[in-house]
Image (cartoon, rainbow, N blue to C red; front, side):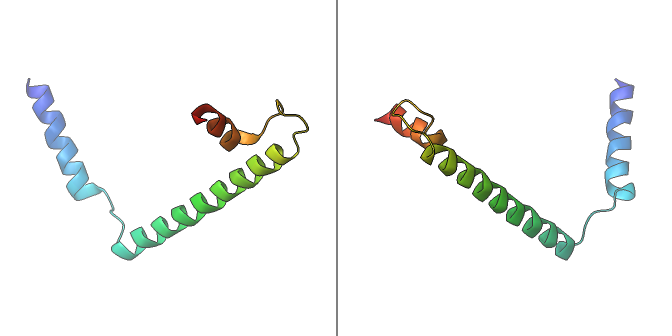
Length: 74
């Protein structure tokens, strides 16, 4: 039991005294970068999905992920 108590004490000490936490402006900058990257990647996936869906020649051809979900709820 004392090992568990020591573990939590050392963990707390490390989080409070040894970890370098980012400043508020650094955190905001990182959040903006992540948000922009997520938007760019989602747009890229959407363009690929639409492109693959448009190039299908028959009704049974791949119509993209959105077409698949639309058929499921139809």
